[in-house]
Image (cartoon, rainbow, N blue to C red; front, side):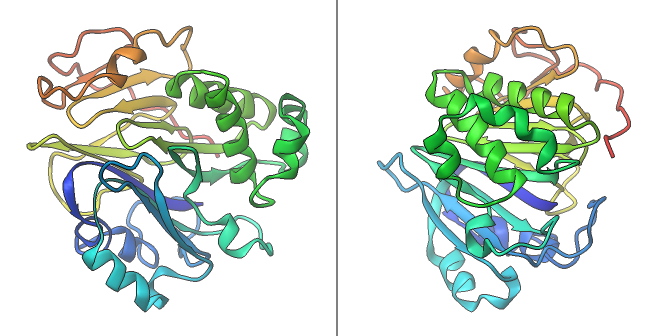
Length: 292
């Protein structure tokens, strides 16, 4: 369980996103408003961000609560970025992995976070380990469900899968083996945000100035926040958001178009099916009961 957030937009201080809003991720660490599982996210935190002209993100992670780290407040005040991913953690199981278990996980030019829990961990996902090279298993950053999910996603990405397909296939396989799991995954490469809503809350906010935020819950009361229906894949650029139902997913060819979005022509509209042209937003899909 955790709360997480990803941002694409004009370069701005991290604190404007993570500490300044009235219900920012900083406050969500002890007083989340929409969290269904757990109450305090004090088991670590992290933020990853992209500097101009450098595709490899930087990270700052700690094992303790975000409110206890005075250095982070200073860092968030002065570090500026046009793309970031951050999370505060409520550990499902106590463990000794400390900072290594805190999101975001990172590799190459990607940042990743998992909000949720795998039921029956670790036994339920054992069959999926056969898809990973032994070196990947031995290199897991932490002994957690999130770290294994990241390894599975990363293996797909490095094999050439598109980001939406990599997340969707990982979620659908994990859910089949471990019914009742909560699998809200969040991924960015600094240009596109890809996320799943599967068993927990997810929202997005688009605004003027080519700006998109995807988060577990709104950090303020702006009426433009929209909730993502459960069991949905989200893909977002700085200007557009595409929502695809995961339950009926047969192919993701249409998601490739959004990966090249961001030319300033979009206005943050939403489409309901992969491959639709971006245009007027349709009525929201019926909301389903979350997995528990």
